[in-house]
Amino acid sequence: MHDKFDRREFLKIGSATTLGVGTLTTAFNFGVAEEVKPVRLGMIGVGGRGTSHVELLLAMGGVEIPAICDINQEHLNHAQSLVEKAGRKRPEGYGRDVEDYQRLVYRDDLDAVLIATYWDWHTPMAVCAMKSGKYAAVEVPAGLTMQDCWDLVNTHEETGVPCMMLENWSFRRDNLAVLKMIRAGLLGEVVHCHCAHSHNCIDHWFFDSEGNMRWGGEYLVKYNASQYTTHALGPVFGWMDIGCGDYFDKVVSFANRSLGINHYFQNKFGANHPNAKRKYAQGDIVTTLVKTKKGNTVVINYDMQLPRPYDNRWEVQGTEGIYNEQRNSVYLAGRSPKYEEWESFDPYQEKYEHTWWKPVQQKASTKRGAKNEIGDQIALGHGGADYQELNQFLKAVRNKTQTPVDVYDSVIMSVINPLSAKSIAEGGATVDCPDFTRGKWQTKKPAFAFEI
Ligand SMILES: NC(=O)c1ccc[n+]([C@@H]2O[C@H](COP(=O)([O-])OP(=O)(O)OC[C@H]3O[C@@H](n4cnc5c(N)ncnc54)[C@H](O)[C@@H]3O)[C@@H](O)[C@H]2O)c1
Image 1: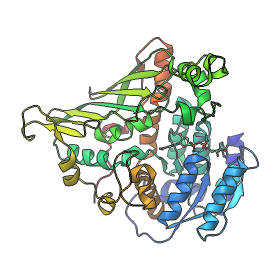
Image 2: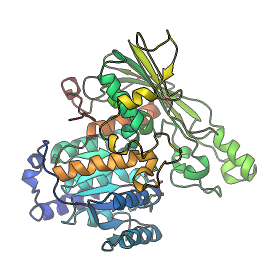
Image 3: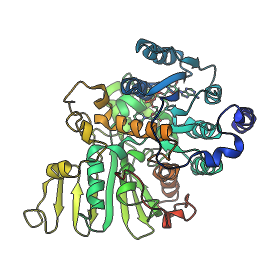
């Protein structure tokens, strides 16, 4: 159904937009151009995440939001009103049914589309956006299945239109400073990373506070996988040059028992609550081991249904040293004051501050949940990382350049979900990661977050 509609509408708008069918592959000249006019952005999905994007975009300026789509009327009205209250024209609303986003996407007055819906919709919506010649910004994960990942890559290659997954942790202040340290050679040759998404989402995201299952919870019933890997891998693809010099080769995953969800419901709502008795496919902790083509390794943990404070357990290790996020520390052989003793990361944060963060370094805190030092709206979304990702996406749209996280980065971070599911289902079998770059990873130069 998507394809039929897309093709017909695509041909119809071909002449109406500046990007005709034949010109799509050459319309984006990934160079540097002048910033000139506001980006015209269509929003699809304005629940929790989409609404925070709308608020941030309104605070940032340089963006018009002529159209918003959501199948939940309340969410739609609220987002439209936010734009109106900011003194802008009320965006046109779409939401007749789950396919109505296509009417928004095929408007001829949009440059880009931002997608923050349920996971199943991310890929069809991003594909539709690219086919209509609009930059696609898609929330995490960009794709859920292997086919999704190929659809995103193939559509990007057919149309030439960029697609960026909004993985905010790629843009975190400390992670970008670590990237600069790695590029400056402080860690020597990088050989190993550990990363995790350790975030107990049982009481507010998979289920609501009254114990009702939300859409995300349905995946816990059906699938056993590393379901949300992109927040773990956000900085890792840059630290390890994945997709540009190295590539994921083999993947092995194991999941432990599923106890956490039942236990939570039994304790809070009683043993007879349906969610206390339900069988969940999803193991509590999934540990995935990836071997790269170069022979490096990455350990990724899914950890979202047991009581615990948030963290990402980032650690990157090289021949000359190691960075550990939980300790906020580094050890650099021959540089750190004491032999094989940690030293604080803070001075390195200052010294290797990324250009993107310099203007806001005093304003935003790096740690999730930490108190913001100013009431600045820009610093509110995940300590400022949301601002950074949206700002860089908008710059790319304005300048018609490639997005900082490209379609290959997006699918490489997303594909661990289906690969881990396959490995777990096959008893911990080693599975191959498909080469979405079709060999280009061997010659592609790293491009993410280079400072000019
Ligand atoms: N990057 C981050 O830090 C971060 C944080 C939270 C959520 N997210 C991601 O954002 C996305 C949304 O999460 P959320 O917490 O806002 O969920 P949500 O349930 O609060 O919002 C989703 C919205 O999408 C709408 N929607 C669903 N299908 C639609 C369709 N076919 N057409 C139009 N509207 C549709 C729903 O009505 C709802 O309003 C998810 O993919 C999630 O993974 C990312």
